[in-house]
Structure formats: C-alpha cells, structure tokens
Image 1 (cartoon, helix red, strand yellow):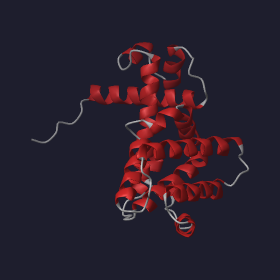
Image 2 (cartoon, rainbow, N blue to C red; image 1 turned 90 degrees about the vertical axis):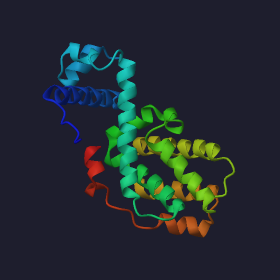
Image 3 (tube, one colour; image 1 turned 180 degrees about the vertical axis):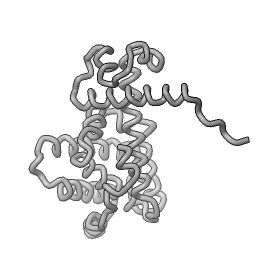
Image 4 (cartoon, one colour; image 1 turned 60 degrees about the horizontal axis):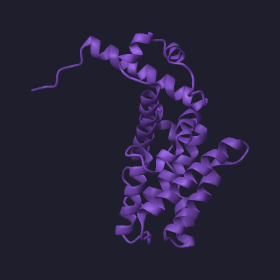
Length: 216
C-alpha cells in the first residue's frame, strides 16, 4: 500500500515545530538560552499555545534543536564523503570539512559549540560517524589506536578547540589551520607524517554545491 500523504494539519504542525527549532538554534547561537518561552514563540512567529503542542519545556526544545543541528551536519558529512574507500581519508575529509563549516555556517557552528560536550557521546550527528570511521580505519589497519573511545575524546576536544579558535581569531586562515590539526590527528591515530600530510593536501568537494549545505 502506498504511504498516505500528510494531511494539511500535519504539514502545519511540522512547519510550526520546524520554526520553533530554528528559533531555538538562533537563540543558542547567540547564547540567549535563558529567555522566556514567549520570546521563543515570538522569534518563531507562532502562538504560545503552539509551543506546548510540541514541547513540554524549553530544555526539551533546546535538546531537539541541538539534535537537529547534529543531524544536519552529519548528513552533510555523509554526502561529502560518499564514494571514498579509505576510512582514514573519510575521517580526514569529515574533520577538514567540519573545520571549514565554522566560518561558512557560523550559526550552526555556534549551536554545536554551545553544546560541545555532547558531541563526544551523542547518538546523532558527529560522534557516531567519527567513531564509525575510526573503528573502520582500525579494522582496515590504517589506524593503530587500541581504544576508539579515548580516541574519540581526543578528536572531539580538538574539534571543539578548533571551532572556538576560529571564532575568536577571524583573521586566521581556517583551511590551513584545520588541515594542520587534521594532519596532527592522523599522525596520532597511526599514519606516518608523510601520508598524513598527503591526505590533508587532497582537494575537497565544494561546500556550497551540496543539498545538505543548503539545508543547513
């Protein structure tokens, strides 16, 4: 049986929820998480009652906003690494692209950085993908780490520190800085210095030509 198309009511509810999530992401990016619910609904251009049709508390909305941002970013990375056979290159390309997104999508970046500690253990977005790539590289003999969880903590810390640095120093070259951090991580994970340098010098896909970037 073909799936039934969503009704007008369901579409309206989905638009309202999306508006609330976008408003919450903007407030998180600005560091304004202590605002009243009324301000959130005004930013989303929806009624107060609509908020409680979707969320019980502000915290629940903020959690949904972070999860949505993580999913958008993770989907983008999946799209931009399609077709790569080497898990070490998949990991490197994902990290290099994430570093560049801090400047190209600053609002999304700030949402992720504001909830930075969740990146290392989240079940959506960056963490499971990075863990997947590290474990795949270990199985393929490309990385030599013995504890992928500890490697993840190091990688997450590097990603967060890089993002904060690029926001604090707008004059810094984001591409060169990101590639240097990625190169250092690859050496830590087990690649030789020469191979890490070569991988980080490979061309990247254009960020502004992907559908996921548009969604972000």
